[in-house]
Length: 102
Image (cartoon, rainbow, N blue to C red; front, side, top):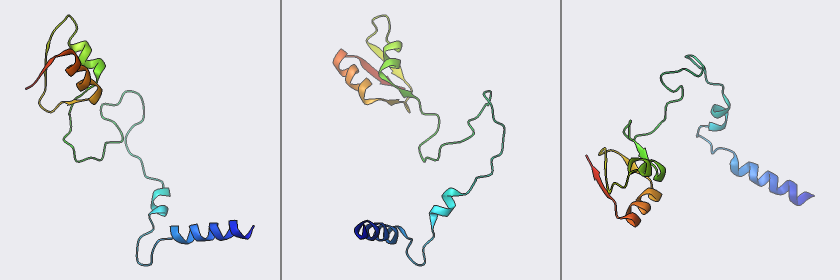
């Protein structure tokens, strides 16, 4: 029983923030004031992504590439900023399809 208590105390001691540093645990638990409207018909998403990547990059999965190439096409034109999934790239190589980035 003492061993369990000692382990818990050691973990709590390790998780305690170092002196002079901020304790982020309290900040994560705070309620964020929310503005805007809630509902199904919103033009912009409420929670915008926090990333440094350029916005409006299109992501193409294997399914979407197959839809673009329906009808036996062997060439696909995508925007220059498009992201192609690894599974789609593998399928493209397997089928010998040419991808052109504008």
